[in-house]
Image 1 (cartoon, rainbow, N blue to C red):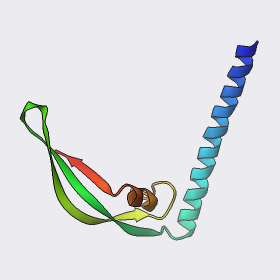
Image 2 (cartoon, one colour; image 1 turned 180 degrees about the vertical axis):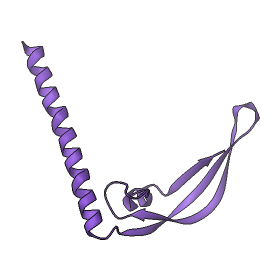
Image 3 (cartoon, rainbow, N blue to C red; image 1 turned 90 degrees about the vertical axis):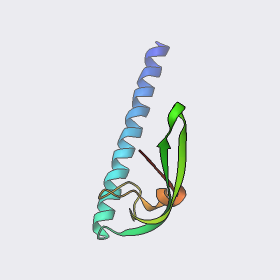
Amino acid sequence: MLLKLMGRWLMRAFLAVAVATLVTYAVDTVVYVLRGSPSSTATVNRFMGIPLKGQKEEYDYLGTAPVPCAVAIFPHGGMDPCWRLRRNPNQWENL
């Protein structure tokens, strides 16, 4: 009985989180479109990982670069959100 009750509450909690996420994404998309798809740029540090012999890897600094970003909570238009790029300014590329 107790396990069945806990299962119901867990399912309700899961559904509530899923619905809240979908509503947040929908509202973010509507606001993004109504604002005219605002974009900005964020400066990021670019690094490249190059595999070497013996399962070692060399890391090279490629410099800084301005990257276009979406002024939104979620990614839109193929661009990462600006808050995410500013919070994590290091981008890695692997060969």
